[in-house]
Image 1: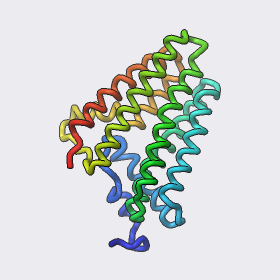
Image 2: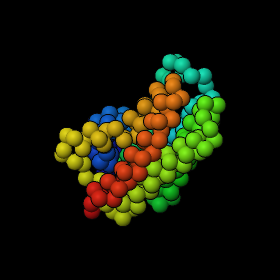
Image 3: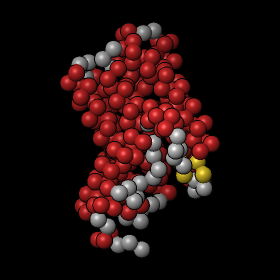
Image 4: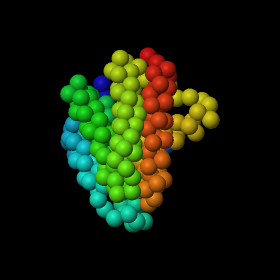
Length: 224
């Protein structure tokens, strides 16, 4: 068993404790999350502590998304906040595996916070665009986006709970499609289409559908 004191930063940068991910996450955010996990390990932060910190930042980010004025500077701020939330979501798992501190409770907390943020983001979008659309259209967006992302998350979570992992594709085309539906790319698109409510509405609906398709893809590509 590897001792905590023997775990180096390079181990995290080499993604030794990361799970297989879509290209943007694998090549960019897993190494950054590894740095956060390494710092958490050295500071004695528990994986659940990392998860809760990410959840608190996520709640703050959702409130900011719904309320801060639309503009370039606010888009930069929201991009940083949401990508930091995602980075911490990747970091808690790496920290748990590196510290040999995985638990059912930790998995439950992680899944619960992920689902909470999945529900809150469409609600934040709805709050922002309500003056521009009918209640029916806003409700459609909220339902489709919550359903699509929740279905994708629950599918991947159930597969991992069964001891299966996602097997990355070697196809360049599939990697490009995977990159489009990767969470950080989704966050980036949602933040910057926020500058135009009409585009934000259409992109949100599109992503809700894409995430549902992604859940079907996960059901077919996770292997023991």
